[in-house]
Structures are given as structure tokens and as C-alpha cells.
Image 1 (cartoon, rainbow over the protein chains, first blue to last red):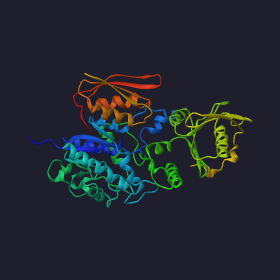
Image 2 (tube, each protein chain N blue to C red):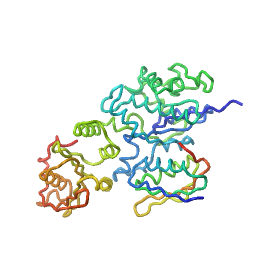
Image 3 (cartoon, rainbow over the protein chains, first blue to last red):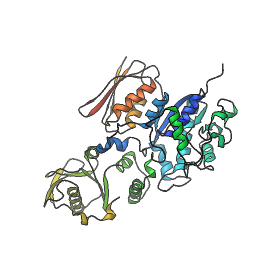
Image 4 (cartoon, rainbow over the protein chains, first blue to last red):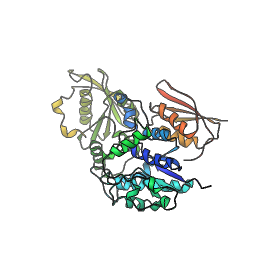
Length: 347
Length: 80
């Protein structure tokens, strides 16, 4: 009896990796999924934080994909290791701070380590030649295979017929004739294939899975780095960049203001680390202050906090300012008028 | 059979699932794990992870604003 070959599939939660894994299952391959958490994944976080996004049930798309396929999914946190990819990408960034080619090489490399450690035979991804301008260019695909160390054990079922045969094809573990030759940015073939398999309600594809492709997020990250004078970060830093309004009225401090109850609740978890404030005379947001504010800066921050609460049109608002150790004081402030808030303050 | 607890509060998706997965990898079949989270998505995600990995969800509920999921380890425990 032929040995059942085992493949580890990179599962992002999008349609392409779902289809790639399904094609392998059709060929009798034992497939298990792997999903990496970098800290920049759009998956889940903002949905979990913000109340108003609760129109759909919260779900993790990678888990949903695994359930659709009936495969195991291994979720691996790579926040620390991933910093080298973000901070100093060998192949540079895309349109924003997205190091897509280095990222793909990193993730396939981690999958290769996992494959070796668990006795699997090859790796599959949902990549399609020419679908992405950076990491899925025809000339980039061999770079990923080489730099990850996966070499010919990396199979891309959706476009394999356009690429040289890999080891699984050469050895007959996989029938190359049953693989696909998808090419370019047109999504219709994938959507038709999803329909064929009966996959519905899959996550909308293409480019939306990473905050590093988001212009406003990367503006905040750039501000964080330039303000600190170095390009390091920790998980809390990059999580906080996803939450609230961010304004920097002066180089020495920044204010993060919750936009609704879910964000206020999330920000309240950081009260022990930052000076924070909220109006006591009116309903309004929680605000965190990062940096080294002067007394005048605290007053300005209190006026901003009042501006974004229900007392914005009041003559005076009482704001409680609390330091990380719990010491607090009350300030009576006039809410800042809209015209007093410079557009340049917004990050 | 042993009972264990995991505090995954103040973590956001997918960290509660990852912490649950990593803790389950240290348990024996039949052990019970109670996970407490504040991320409302965990109410769906942790049972989903359990289904695909062969563990039994004995209870899942929201209690005082926290998500509580109680899991019995299946036979497929072990590292990821």
C-alpha cells in the first residue's frame, strides 16, 4: 500500500489557501493547516474591540477554513521573531510598511521547520502567479522557495502548472495534471471553484489581512518609530496603534482617545501604564497619554478629551486625570473647538 | 483526570486560542481545562478550535462579561 503523504498548508483564512488545501485533500493527501500570528494580522482584533462592528458574528477565519476542510489547524505566535521582517526587510517594503516578500519567505521558512519537526513531506500555499505586485510576482516565487529553505518541497496547487515540477509532483505523490494554472489578479476562477466546492461566506480575499498594508496604520507606526528614535516595538505598541483616535499635538506626547465603548474598555486595560483621563461631568471617552507631557500639555489633552465627549458644547467640563499609580486630580477645562484642532495632529 | 485553569483575559483574538492550544498540548487525555477570556470572539473560536482538534467542549458561556469555556482533552493532545 502506498504511503499516505502529508502536507502542511499555510492557512491565512482567505479563499486561496482554502482552495489550495482542498485540491490536496482531493488527491488523498493528509493535510494539516498552520497559521502564524504576527501581531499585525487584521484577523479578529478590531472586530473584537469595536462594538459597532458586531453586525456579523465574530470568527477567526483561519479556524473557519479549517472547519470547512475538516483539517487540524496549528496556530503559532511569531510576534518576536517577526520583528526582524518588519524592521529590516531584505527585499524592502511595498506601498506602505508591508514587507510582503520577506514575510512570505519567513512564513514558508517557519512552515518548513514545522514540517521537518513533525515528519511531514511538503508545504502548500495558496499563492497565484502574478496575483500580488510584490510577493507573488513570477520572479518572486523562486525567491520564496529558496530563502525559506523549502526549495522543491513547496507546492502551489493553484498555479503549479505554470511552474517547474516540485518534488511531490516528480515523485508522484501528487498528480500534476490535476493541479491548476491560475495566473494574474482575476478572482473569477477562484470564486467559481469555491462555488463548485460549495464554499460560501468565505473571507473576502486580497490584501486585507495585514495592518502593514494599511496607510493610516503605517502612518501611526512610522510616527512611533520616528518619535522614539528607533524602530523597535512590542506587542502592546502595535495593538494600541489599532485602537482609537491618535493625535500628536507636540513631539513630546501623544493622546489616544477611544471612539466607542468597546475601545474605551480595551484602553482601560492600559491604565496602569499611562497617564489617562476621562470627563466626570459628562459622558465621554477614555484617553491615554503617551510620552512626557508638561502641565500645559495635560491641560490641552484634557480639553481634547472633553472635545470628543458629550460635553463638547458645554462651557466647562470636569476631567479626571490619573497617573499610572492611581493618583488623580480634577481639571476644569473648556472643550477644544473643532477649529483649534490642527489636521496635522491626527495620525 | 486533573482540572486546570487558564487565564486568557485581556488578550485579543487569536491569542486566547493560541494560549488554549499551547496549554492543551501539555495535558493528558481526559483532563479538564477551564479558560476565561474577555475577547467575545473566544466564545466561538475556542469551541471551533476544539472541534477541529478532537477536544470536547463541556460548557461555553458568558459570565459577568467574561467568556468561560470548559474543555475535556481528547486523545489527540500533544504539541503544535
